[in-house]
Length: 111
Length: 115
Image (cartoon, rainbow over all chains, first blue to last red; front, side, top):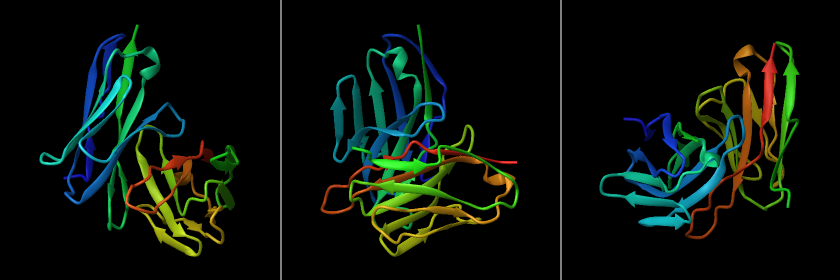
């Protein structure tokens, strides 16, 4: 099983829709989690940090389920500008590679 | 507030040439990273550093070298460029101290083509 797995998508949703992505991780020692968005051929930009059960920032909500080892990202009222690839990042303290990136989930919001 | 600065933004190299990709950060971050991202693929860690004078290999270090003589700078060296090294290279940094894990901040990348 890969350390961090994401559904690659693409998720094609209409404007105004609610969409959710999941990210599963294999190492139970994972401590902290981050969601980044990446536009085509641009650098990843931090969307949200998750240290406990979850986090909310406007239309974006992240929920962490340590028992099932996944973290989700919910986007409400999708905008065209939300179209991007969403990367899940897991921090494992003490590991040789301290931050593990998922391959990303692609979202297209359609007018 | 510059953050993480990478130079150059674009470069075309011939096979066998060498070059150094520059990365500097002004946030006093102790950890720095180099990634490569091939078209349509995820980020792959090349090298990272936990502080000045300390570097470690990541997932794909072959063909690259790094140094970390100062906290601010973390250059990536390609000695003998090969077509397989055509990619977008991202430098990132983060502050590691205390109990709260801080996220990475990324530079805007160097797009490198080897022909």
